[in-house]
Image (cartoon, rainbow, N blue to C red; front, side, top):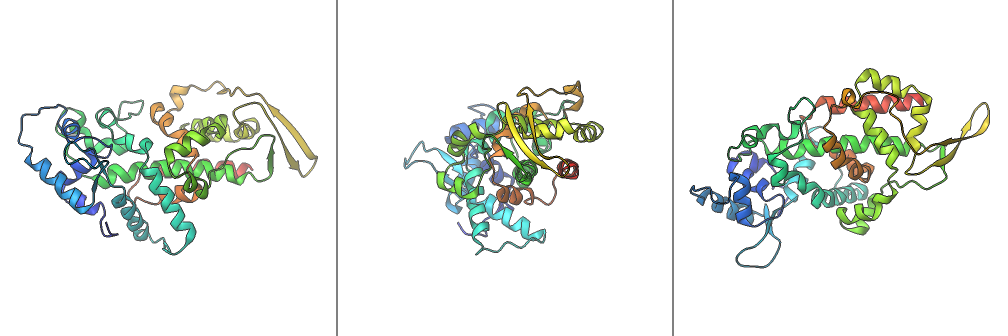
Length: 340
């Protein structure tokens, strides 16, 4: 598959895009048909499906997970997504130097992330039929073009770029903002080491799922919980929270009681100790939440393990993302950095 194989080809072919998404989570042909029609035996002519499956395999959009002649498990190739991300970033005016070692390694890491079971599960049968919803019942932006399918109709993917790139962009924004905050706190010394993901670490492991299994124990749970707690707060609560010294300092909590030191211009070296239990200061969780809690739970730890340079690519990959996501992340980053 060459760099010209992008999602644009699928954008102009609804049937091809539908088959591509149906195999995004690896499966047998029969399972893909069941995903598309909500039933094992839909009682319709399926020649269009077999034709598109063969076309996409020939063009490299689908690959076999085994060497069986019959009954093979297929999965969608990630390369068209990678190629599209490169293309979209170039359209936005950012220059990607192909020979740059950091860019190469970052894209190789991105490939591992998008090819993971974790990311592919966002396009499983269960998730496509029952997508994440806001507290008001509205489907989150990524899955909104599937409203007819969600209601019980046949799957027809009419905007495959939005379906894939919007989610990548959103996760990238959250990951970039969180890791940017954590990497900025160089004047703090932790009693216990906090893990910051590195592009070489992920490349060395060679699998994002395995990388998560190995590194998740090092995620500062209280810090990531606090980050998403503030991220989903409305603007008045966010500003109020960020301006509280106790709240700002507590972002440095790791998964157990921690003692750290910071240099003060007036008093020299000061010591602080925090309890491991984080309190929400009396605010109503229901009032604050805009993002679905199930969605946050599905991305918060993985987003903390995406290297900063990779997250930066992800957040630039889509020209038509939700401005609310970008603005919310920017506001959160600005408020915290202003305080520090």
